[in-house]
Amino acid sequence: MRIDKLLANMGYGTRKEVKSLLKGGTVHVNESPVKNGKTHVDPEEDVVTVAGEKVEYRRFIYLMMNKPGDLISATEDQNEWTVVDILQPEDKVFSPFPVGRLDKDTEGLLLLTNDGQLSHRLTSPKKGVGKTYVAEVAGEVTGDDADAFERGVTLDDGYVTRPANLHIIESGDISHVELVITEGKFHQVKRMFEARGKKVTRLKRVKMGELVLDEELEPGEYRELRENEIEYLHTITSKDKG
Ligand code: URA
Image 1 (spheres, rainbow, N blue to C red):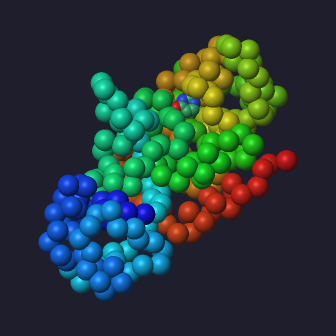
Image 2: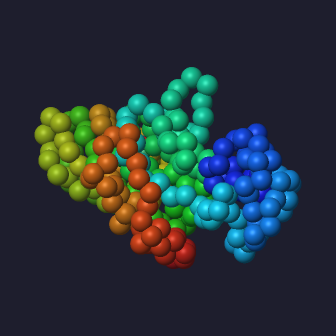
Image 3: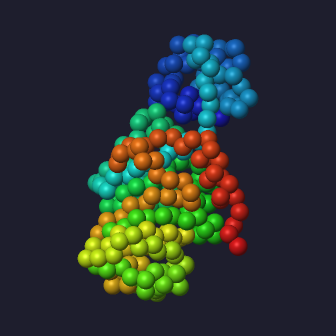
């Protein structure tokens, strides 16, 4: 990797700023001064220092966000604010992207990473990772709805959903439910309820597998995943579900 790219990735400024940093002569690779941005370094092996301080290289970033209900799950957009827009610059330099999509008005657990393989695996139906949502639904939700979700319901485009687990927390004019699905079709939860003639009025994702949304995070806040959480996600996505 080029030294200027490595330094830019690690938050030492834009490519232009890094160029003048290098010119200044404070960057060393294995104790030798380096001024040329094109110089190749092995980030895992070479010791890079800036003004005597070691540059700790890391390739991946894993963030857990409590997505608020007014941002779109994208990296950039011409007209709308995205979940990446609210990240701190020191996190943005890693170019994280959302793992799957939550609708603009859906709240809750959203992972952002630059680890494409993990992202792919977490969203692949083959891995069968459960996504748990809590939803507010207009009208009564019944055991018949739960049975239908267990069997699979036919969406408006003819797609039959995989078995999903519906737990009714409270049923009434406005019902509260928890639903676990293992796939992520466009507007899936809303369309599953539509298939039962019901409308989701509020939707929040609270879990992916057993990774729970951190209750300390207010909507719009995020934190890095802990080592054990990252390990857990790698473990549950390492095998296909048979
Ligand atoms: N299902 C939906 O309908 N919307 C989401 O954002 C996620 C799942």
